[in-house]
Image (cartoon, rainbow, N blue to C red; front, top):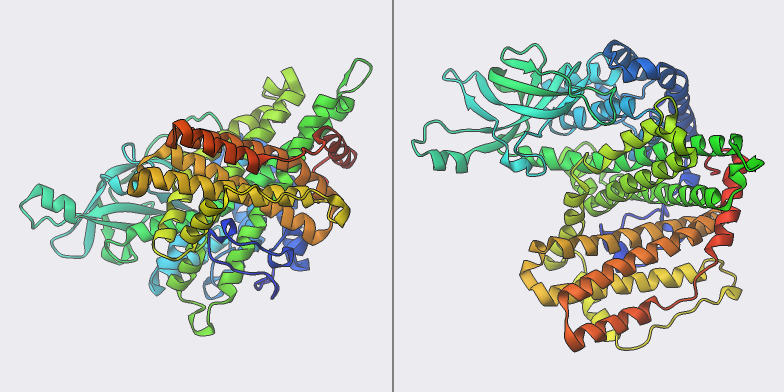
Length: 608
């Protein structure tokens, strides 16, 4: 597999993160799956064929926790170059662009237990060393990780500090001779722990010279360490037996006077939070892409079963309510693809714009990726909830057989649930989405406050809606819905800000409702831009079908928010404004769904 350069064309833009709410994009400015290069299509095919011929063929052994099989498959993936996604060439990697990295995550997601092991290794397992490692650390570890000779794991969570990562209890103390850090503590839910060779472990470095315990705690430095499996004092606990992803390894780590050489401190002491949080942005967009791939696989199973299953003298794929489920899955996958590759395309465009003398500057690379933290969190939340909806539809298509282990719907249903917890819970990510945008607005990095003020001044005037499709654009209705969805989100943000001012971040329910509006705006706009860019009849159908769901979600969130921040005459006035902004003639979702499902049923899979 050859090294792939940045695929984004000159027209693909890298706008400010979060600017989708206040700026309009042109279709040519976004990256879509239809823009994949020939090399990227070949890599997609390589990864998909590996997943089908190697991973699915060994599914029974993988699910039984036969980790010798899992490790052998990871090594085979390394031999194909699939493990070297983000590793620099000088350390045996391929230095792929992020679109290609997302493509591999997408296509490797046919069996979640293996996908989790693979993604944990190439993402949160390897990237900390790529970005923060010293030359010596990179030379020592990256060639082994790129080939799959060694497997990596990432140990941040603890029993008392899941989402509250900075509250970890694991402590590191410098030895008297200054040659080692002595670590004590316990890590929980560590993916790949049962067979990993190298762990990135987070701990707080304590100053033992300070006699005041509270002062020692305040001054403890949140840091990261590279710990090899055979390090004295490191013990891997027993495997967890989980609801889903049963074939993946999940164990606790116990550190008891674990002696780590000082040269294995990763990055700077006290800067471990940069490693922990920056790595998660990559993890989130890859998880979103993997959810799309998982949904695509589940839909194919559902369609196959629906075509084979007979009831009342015909295939159940001929029934309207089954077609409705297939249409909903198809539309959601289209939207998910659109969001995933739009997001990663922006990241690649931003990385491509780094000056030549800074191309290898890890801090510059991280800064460009962090710019899209909002979009990465949106993709993680929306993708994981989309996959839950799809696997639920597929279980229902299978009916009683969907509840039986020997059929694929049951396992997919169980496996899907973890994605709403991985890479930061969806609740935490919803707070990140709204909080990050409001923070950027308050610091002047994003012109959100002027946009909110303009909308608050305008809303007393009726909106200018135009659903005339005779103008030649089959998605004029959806474009108008999108424009008003942005106004609703800005109007609600303004209302909430007026009510709570600087304490808005403490109102988690309000923050989550705002996040849901932002998520649906980004989802609908991504689908609309992709459909217009590629003039795809299927894309038009998917966008039209999904728009009805998006606007319903936005309306429900807006009504909850307005009722929470207003009362009396103000409440009635704001609800009247909301009704005007929501006024539209609905599309015929029944006919659209039937047409869309026919494409999928005839193809026997997601039809794009």
